[in-house]
Image (cartoon, rainbow, N blue to C red; front, side, top):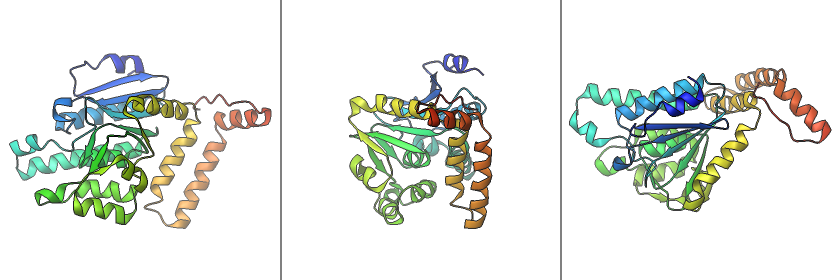
Length: 269
């Protein structure tokens, strides 16, 4: 599916909106009346969009945002209460796990543009994205302990995004942290006035979209794999990725631009 078709084929009443421009695909969780809670329909729509983006070379960066006053309130508890069977619950978490893995496995960088609340699986989304920019009024929480559970899958992404003690405090206490605290512990990269949020996220996305796409894809993949590999295996993987990047047109373009002291015009190849 072409970028133009992708943007136009999703109606405004869809649970997910996609807009493509200048190499940036913006995905909007579109359930504002439910604070963009992750219903099965929304997770499946987001999964389909990510699968399409993965195979779309015109997309060089992804922005993930929420419609209305919230980013994402986590799983749709109303939907889960309507069918509390073990099979239904397992389907929800299996779908969510696949979705989060798909974000990490995209070749394109993913930026979370966070307004309002990002709780439970919504906080997991933020932690899973490569970068996050939030508004000054954003709030983040993993409140599972307050209903006798714990935020099990959000715990995985959160503990890989921030220090262990910071993650434990959020998980054990369950109270929201504000935007400045999220910045301090490393959950987000930048805090900006709400009026500037969209422009700041788009500016960062466009900067990444102008970069060497192949190299950025290798970079994010290798950084994430460092959690799982031992040091010798990781160094071997990084050497192979370096050789792959050195064979790209972007490397030659970048080297020529460096020698000429001019800005590089990377092609993504």
